[in-house]
Image 1 (tube, rainbow, N blue to C red):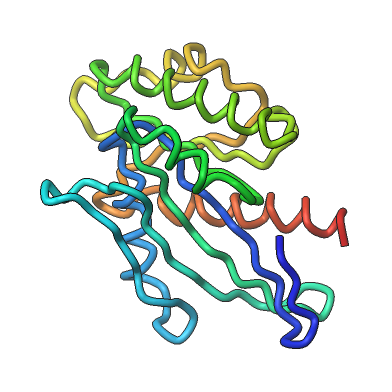
Image 2 (image 1 turned 90 degrees about the horizontal axis):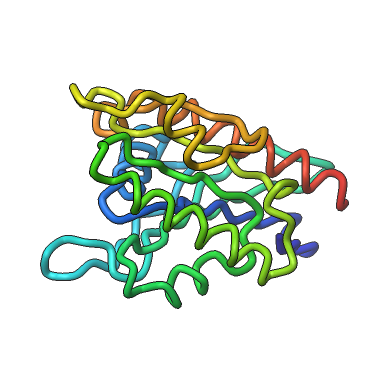
Length: 194
């Protein structure tokens, strides 16, 4: 959280975290395409030649007002590939909330667990309690014919009270249903600090 008192703005950061190809960038692309252009920035993506996110995607949206301040949310994605762990940590630094995107494909279960454990460790390293930090879990790719049951994902990831949303990000299903409670959770947390 950063407050610019002169402009009466509060800048908040939500990071989409998860394994490679789980749908983090797809979420931001759908949000960008469906938010009023006057309330959002351009979508910035740093990608490899293979069209994979190498560092982050970034999108800024503006919403209403809280305690006389205009909140501006910066939405980021972390790179999913394991060899970009230091980039994940750098992007996560200073986050006010996280959307953890879990891939529902059975072959991606281990990658989901690795990303979840990495998120928990990074939050602890930043002095945050993962059980109290605003995290929304999105179970993406629910339209796959062999999608793992949500109960299996919930058990394996060891969800501890976090809000969970089912999604098909490519079709926009569950995208805003994930973003809205993420924003709300961040705002509730911020109001306690103001």
